[in-house]
Image 1 (cartoon, rainbow, N blue to C red):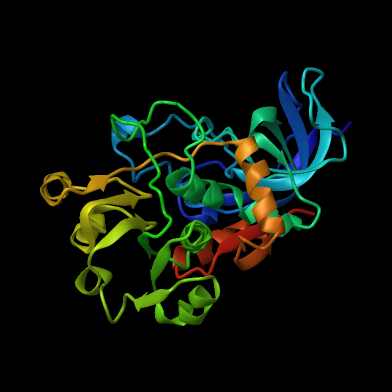
Image 2: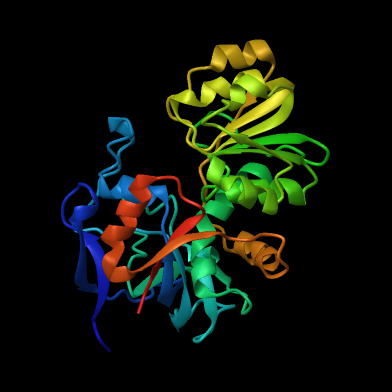
Length: 338
């Protein structure tokens, strides 16, 4: 058996230019793991955070990364081999996964490659009706929206706050989604509608028709109308952008409402939130095969649609990262693996 595979690696931290199309050791499945021949890889922000050495995190939070490293977590492919202690998966099964997140933050997820070994509990069967590109685009973004809004799905300690995150009931509620056309945002819009909420989508003007098509009841072009200036008395804000500016959404919420920043670092509105009677809560998305099995049915019946911004061959991952850096994505970027 060939001991090497093609992979995207970086040997130093930096911009997209550090990504190389290399020969790398082919993994073998350890106990409890499944080896997957990858057909497509979905891109996510942690991919470029890793490539940059997590310089956006406080020093005490930056993981120690061994170089060279292979980025990426989201894959769709076909089972190549199964460890003897694994049940439920067989050679030839089509599968998808968010691999080792957050346990592989330091580069152990290794999805930008032809093969990856996946812990069996993180793997799900890919519905035959869903193509590999769509399936690879789904895991991190859809699990993020799902674990924030529908069900957390685990009882691991929350590293971002002292208490565990709890999704809010959505039926009959009003939900504002900021960054509604992005990878997480366009899925948050659809999950809100699925659960019976009125959904207000904030994004750039070019996305208005698209977001109405996905179910948004109201659209705000944030370039001409800042959502925090025109929206009041919503029950929940899902801010998929987050960061230091997420405080501004506190004024849009009614007493008893909640703000869920997907990227919580820099939030400084705790006192204002307490004065307004608003709950601010976040969580870190975690790999979860059973949730992906459940979500797969929603992809099949059309309840959830995954938007694809663009695709690139694996060898041109650098160009894919350059596209991501330009922003204003409509959905997800996906790498195609030969």
